Structures are given as C-alpha cells and as structure tokens.
Length: 331
Image (cartoon, rainbow, N blue to C red):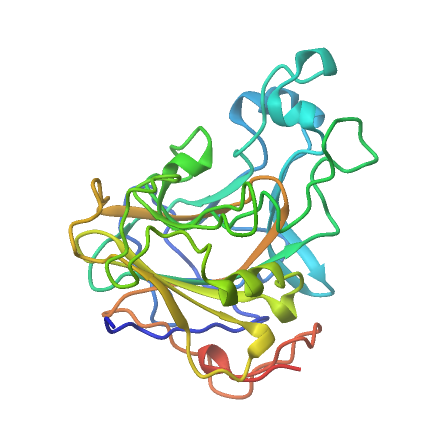
C-alpha cells in the first residue's frame, strides 16, 4: 500500500484566521501551520469563499429559486457549510410553464478563491454528513417524484476543483479535479473521481477499481448512516504530485478506530489524462442536503497544528469531544 498522511479533524474549534483572498495567488498559509483551516466559526463566511446559492442566470430572479449554499447553524453555536437542491422538480429542470425558465441544478455550491498548487502531497481533510429531514422537492411543493432526501442524489462533489469561486460560472460537477462525487441512481453509485465528474476511465492501480464504491459495503454503510454530526464521515483526499489522487475515510460512528481507511489511490501512475496543477477547494450537493465542516488544507511543508495551548473548548453540541486532529473518542 502506498504511504499516506493521516490527518483527522475536530468539530467545533472556535478559531478563525486571516486568509489570502487573491483569486490567482498561491495561498500563503494560516496561523496553525497549514495552508487553510475553516471551522465556520459563525454564520458569516469570509471572502476566502464564494457562495453560489443558485445558477448565475437565476440570480436576477433569486427570490423565485430555492436551492441553498450557505453557512448554516445546525446546532446552537455550531456552524457548517450547507448545500441543498431546489424544492421542486420544475425548478430543477427549468419548466417554464411552472415558473422556472432556467434550470437550476448542480449550481448550489461553495468554491474557494485561493489556489493551491499540486505537489508535496497536497491534501484536504473535511467532515461531511447529510440531513434527510431537509429534502429537495419537498412534498409541500408541487412537482413530481419528490421528495429527494439525503443520501439519494447527494454528494460532496469535492474537495479539489479546477477553477476558483471568482471565475467559475456554471455547473459545479464538471469542475471537479479530485473528490467524492454523487449518488445518482443508487447507494452503490458513489464514486471517487479525478479529472472531471463521471469520468469512469480513471483507474485505481492500488485497489484495482475504477473509483466506483459499489463493492465497498463498509463505506456505503458509513455514508448512508452519516445523517447527523455524531455519525459524520471524515474524508482525506491527497493529490498525487503529478496526477491522480487518493481517498481515505473514517466514520465518527466508530470514533475509537485508530486510522483512516484508504479506498482509492491512482496517484502518479499516469492514469489521469488531464491533471490540473492549480486547484481550488469546493463542495456541493446535487439535490439532497449536505453539510461540510472543519476543512483543512496542508502539504508536507505546511502541516496543520493545534491551536493555542490549553484544553479545547467543549462545543455546545456535545456529540464530539477530543483534542484537535488526533481525537479518538466521542460521546
């Protein structure tokens, strides 16, 4: 097995640090030694990020469109990025007879404005879960085939993308450089993707698959069960220095496990036909509601470290406690 960096994360650390906001510059780092740390300390996201709640063409009539991309208070004093698709199928497809001349799908996303350069095992760790209670095509709205709740038609669609939030103006899924995509047709449909979403020609030389997790029942069980923060999954994606990426995960429902579990790796074996050198961090759902929290970006020369010395403050949501990245328990 290829060597990999083990990086975990902490729920509810109440710090935020100044970050570069240049759309084209390499990110210069944060006060904890990594390249970026985003714990969402409040409802107000800073200018490091571009929040796109609906398609760009929808913005002049934003009040008519219902998809979500925002910082959300999921428990008292606890915040995370939230993405959810439209309330009706008519809005999803752009049904002009029902008031939606522009289709609004794959648009509700978060994208960073800071570039990170592939190399030195550039990696991103994030915590991810869904909210089945907040369904797209809610039954209180008119439209067929609803509701669509997490985990159906839901995916992180991240972390690594090929364009910044400042200059990307179309559906988020085609911008994916490396990351977990989306469950479209069934629980076995989640994939890890490099070089663009739905590109199933990308081969995983270590695990002998094409990135489809259909036969990885533990991972499917973990992601289907990630319906609140105490059962979230922690995902680590490591970019190859020339091409490809690796993905590992752990479930917070099994918080005493010692390490991440690697389930995909096609780094640096020339299986990726169009690797990008510059990358940006972003996330989105298709339809079902998802949350993304505690985003850490680092590389071998910029290791994310704990905050100031002393005990970690206990979050108001006591689902998870522990010390910084290396926690191994929850309650």
